[in-house]
Image 1 (cartoon, rainbow, N blue to C red):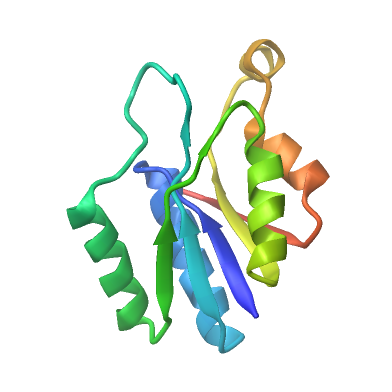
Image 2 (image 1 turned 180 degrees about the horizontal axis):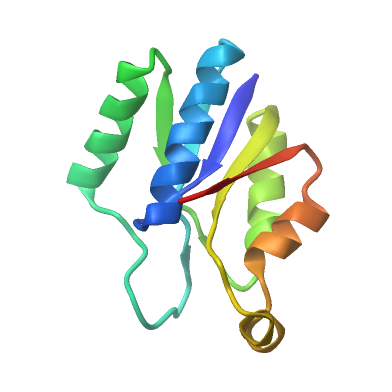
Length: 129
């Protein structure tokens, strides 16, 4: 079995890594870290480079967890991408980081985290920075 960790280079992503690696160690599972760039996205870059991938793998090793980092891209259906990967990797838990957003921000922009929580086919653990 595997723990799937959603990661973006932000404090919430770091919180998800810590919580995900702790769960993977507790369950004697491997971890798959997903860094998914939305196709055509503008704004702050969310894709990570080789140095960051190595750092994440090393963090997993420090926790005695085997880690694989994937960088699939997605249109506007991140929950669907995570569900597909959860099925492919026989995931038992998804871990994501949450940030505080105003009700107006969630209404206007939607909430990928909320969709993941509602649409995930396996349990979801959330971590706050």
